Image (cartoon, rainbow, N blue to C red):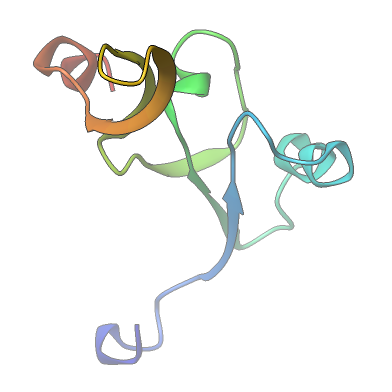
Length: 91
């Protein structure tokens, strides 16, 4: 950020994910102070379920947790996998 010069605005960086504690969730919807940009780091939870006003940038890492059945163990597991091209195009 320093190399970008003095014109770079201050940032508020907020994570959004399904297990986010409720006390942290309220900050997501608060308007950013004047002259400060709100940057949201998201997961696929925001794809269809949330509308957040006042966002300049959204950062999506391109991975999701998917439930996958493991036939060797006989149980479902949450596995981090890359998003599909269809999901990527909706961003």
